Length: 196
Image (cartoon, rainbow, N blue to C red):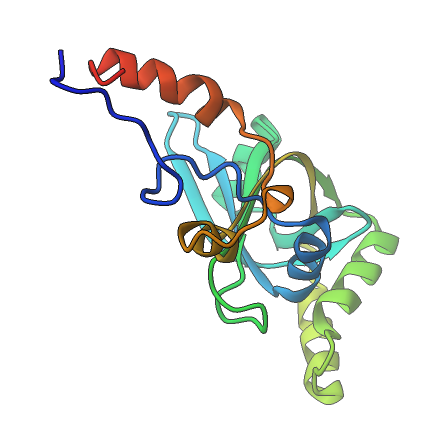
């Protein structure tokens, strides 16, 4: 048993972070700003694997593409559960804002979806039209598959809010609800370690 109890303090440590979610408008701006995200899936022997992918956020989903023979495509056909992770680092939003989405993958090989997605991926805001047209054309191969990653659960974090809380200047109304990791699991872990 510990000599004294440990009480996590969001103004002094990093134990309770679920109370700093992204506001909806910031989340949407980040989703529409990033051009790359990590796609994670599980191999058949249970290993988690992730790779960077070019991504388009549209129609309430993440959209990516890969060739049909890639290991990830076989894995996602076997088990469509996956996750997408992205960060604000390198964007005009600055560092410290992150999004993780638990998703299910839906695959498309129809002409209409391919035409829409290849154009959306190639002709991003600010893209050089000639280079974008060449990129769009190069995507259109018979092996290429379009993936829609449909979000089912969101985990977001706003480091700026945590910084404000640490400084004692974050209004309570800007905090989010404490999620189960902090509201339930933290207390169990403190008890298991003799810290409660």
